[in-house]
Length: 552
Image (tube, rainbow, N blue to C red; front, side, top):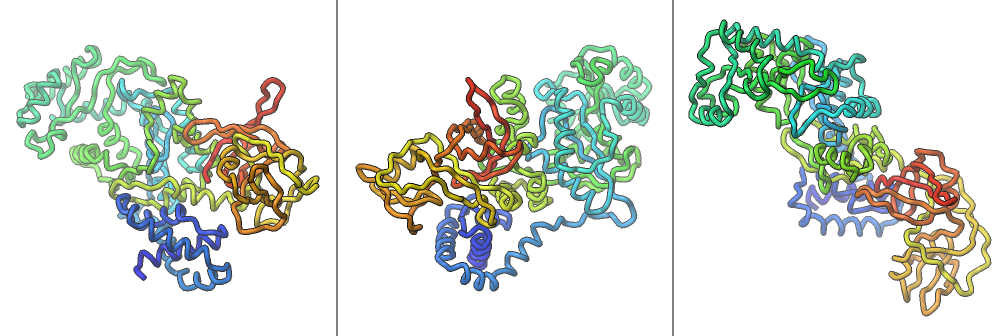
């Protein structure tokens, strides 16, 4: 047996012991975390299914006995998954990190990853984490949203991220950045440029210096002061670099630009705004940041920060870059979410299609699961694609033991069962691992339209009740719990709606007992999935119980 097959069997056995039956969809995410690539799925799935089938045929006792031989494989991998690699250069100083969200909307799983990593490392080294709102003016395509400030703070607090109590806003620090801009001009390291973008692009490509660059610092200082009265787009402050730098994009980059757009916090008090690398070069020094964890997409900004630090002769913090987090089957886009929220297409920033922290919380994805999910991914140096089932598997493990079981039927069909036993009520376990039961009154029986069509001509079991057979009529078959398909049913019911991750409401009926649930209760609709009880609404005198779908 190959090492990969041993891994599959180890996780299949563990899965079967935890949930009573191994599930191939729960094995695959583990393999992704250990290097399996997306293109390898097709070839590996038959092996997973074969091994899962073999494990499911074993008795619980045999599974336990065999698992003892595979337990170490799981333990070794789990230890690797949960250990963050050490940071460099931490011996002689207190670790200070920063989380720097740009307030253009709610934070989703992709952009939250870096902030969570910074938080986890601050905890690991008993250091400090600063929350800095990266609210320079942004762009017309990606503007700052006033509500984003509170959405970001809300997400950090919900996740339990411990940051320095006082939030730092870049929009409060403009005069500090101006001071260092003037210092760069005096050092003959920056100049005011009036050239058109097209000309600059052409000069960069050819390695030709701009004519504006030739003026001495005294003239540049005057031009800098004039910038504050000039029209938007007519001038920028540029850093002086080698025009022969291997990367044309690095040559004479912009440090400040003019913008007449109103800022949510400062309105039109300031017109000259720093770029990301200028503001961060100054702040990372003044805030005494020791380690910077940021995405690979900011590599050129990191290089520019280093260049500016060297001009000022400042000590460099440790720079660590990490790859993008892509979620297989999920499109993460703050810009798209912002557009859909504004248009009214989405319910709001907590719409499940935004994948924001607010939406995940409302679905019942726990903060513990999200942090563990990011911790297992760790400091990936390259872009990584992870199936969303990886997050769901962690969350399932956290909520499964507490989630009571109920029955839901979508598109209900009322059955007329011939010769059914006269059963007035039955007791059904609230949870397979608990003794507590709930009483269900038996009246008319409803099953889903899908099951009604699917099992024509077959014998099936109404879960926890008895067997029926679909013939020309629906017949009572037996009370015996045979090894035959089991389906959900509902008798004494209330009406429900479940909001699915794709933004669609699924309507149905569920056990009347759910009317006793407290808001935010996590339950499992058997053979449907885990859901969070959200609210009750009354339409035309009828109560409708609303749930948000978490996962299967």
